[in-house]
Length: 212
Image (cartoon, rainbow, N blue to C red; front, side, top):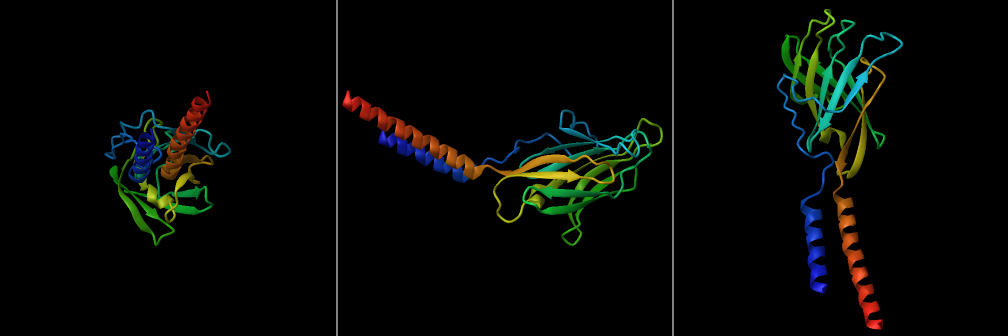
């Protein structure tokens, strides 16, 4: 029995070292190709300023994998507002703030580059897509999809779950919230706790059996 417990403990240690569990790390199935056909079912937030133009409602869908935050912005079909060089304000649960700028190309179909405004205005991704709509017919509007590396929301070797709040002030007063981080050390504690509890239970069982 002691050998079994030692083997279980050893396996737990290997799991903790080699397989930290990233939150939302499963592949999300999103491909940045300008077709926007794989965003169905992804979490959506509707941005609007109710006191300014109630008919302007923009949708923002988001998902993450182990490396990136993916965003899809669909501008409102009413009001004639086009996707421009808008700023994304990011607030982390540790109190830090970051600012990114969306830089879409002008052609009807073009690329989207995301710039870090706090780090020398460097590009953090350049493989997004924008498709321009009519913006005046009440049926079509600008739409874009792009990514931001999750490393942009992390500081140093910080571990654990972090809540990130995104806001695009030009589009509305609502926020998009997602989580990033790793549960690796916490999973290790849980697994080791399970092994310790099992050992204590077996020890108690042997004592009771010996006294019987």
